[in-house]
Amino acid sequence: MNFKNTAVLIVGHGGWPSDCPEELAGKLKRLESKRRKENAPPSEEEIDLDSIVRGWPRTPETDPYKYGLEKLASRLAERLNFYSIGLAYNEFCDPTIGNAATRLIQEGARSVIVVSTMFTPGGSHSEKEIPEEIELLQAAYPDVEFVYAWPFDMDRVADMLAEHVMDFSSHLSVR
Image (tube, rainbow, N blue to C red):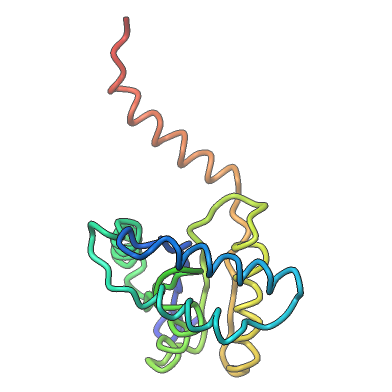
């Protein structure tokens, strides 16, 4: 494998900015729900609302999730310094998976490993929506190889969480 031409695209859920009006969230989710029930493409109204929400100005105070995911991406980049690293959000925040992947390809990626920060099986984002996005990208970029690093090995996730819990066990006060 030529690591120079390989990128890792980290996909997080995305958070709702705290200063964005809640009525936008309700309307966007209703439109999305209706579209999914009807198995229809997004309406212009849904596309417009999604664009407004994703492009909403953010700060560490209004969207701590975004800044937390950026820190995670930075730490991962230190460990995978032979790959290009990209960051995308499944919903509510820019860049989209498609936009982030396109940027990596424009920068020279010929292979893209997509990894979700959503570890557990059963979620529609990791099991349905992200693979659908990857299918669209594969059709748009047939000369680029996309690999979805899913599902996670639950034993490895459990090991990581157990180690984390043990790190915090020293904070307990035994009574």
